[in-house]
View 1 (cartoon, helix red, strand yellow):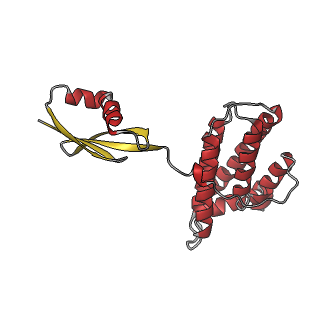
View 2 (cartoon, one colour):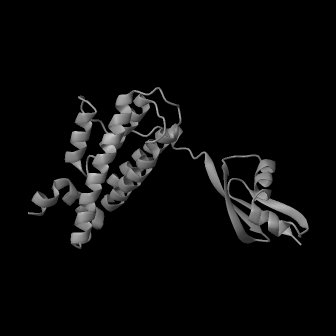
View 3 (cartoon, one colour):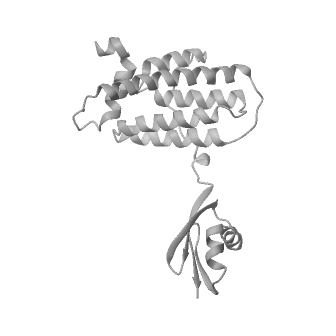
Length: 219
């Protein structure tokens, strides 16, 4: 009866999202409805992506989508091996939130199609029926093959640097990985919170842990 009301994919999604497989499921009508609503929201997004692909834009060569897709391949592949199905569902929700914002960017149609097909393949074990229809809409007639992550997209280009003053954490900034020490210091001093603290202090020295931390010793 529940499958007739909500559809098999929504039921699968809810069951997998509720708990790790070794625990009993806590049935919830509210949770079931949330899964059903997500399937419908995803289908609206799918149609929007399809429109974008069919426009056949030349677009830009922004790597955001490539980076996200390859990191997603890595995460879902690992979670499948570990039977972390509820985490995979969380990955799918994260993907929806990413795509709903990213779809307004001017991507090349082929780049969008290629990445979207990989994302659909990753979602197939969880919601196979709706994904099968989405793949048909893309006119993909070959057998789906589980994608492999390209390592060049897995490397982090940015790092979060903890800023300390006399050993106490005061702020956090995001900078390019392996940025030169002088440039890191320059960026930190532009941080309003840090510049206010340092303005009436005598800076004795600074200690840098590459890509991780900068500690200003002041008096």
